[in-house]
Length: 83
Image (cartoon, rainbow, N blue to C red):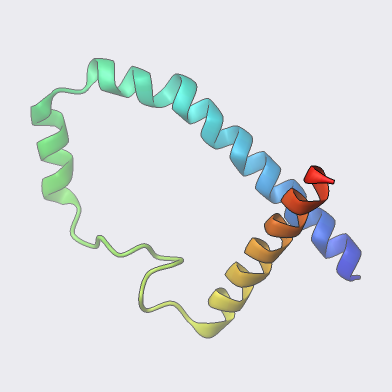
């Protein structure tokens, strides 16, 4: 049902937000401590495809629609929390 899908979508967003917060707090600071400019240059040299595979310009219509639905669910969730 639509409610179940919305619940799963909200849970997905919440889990990903917690994951990104963990990365910001623990992972990225540690990476910045141990990586040298030479390390970053070596990585940069090996990256050839810089287009986002999910939200880049060549995305299929179904992914755009799914992206819009997720954003709408997130907006509705934020609006619900403000009331």
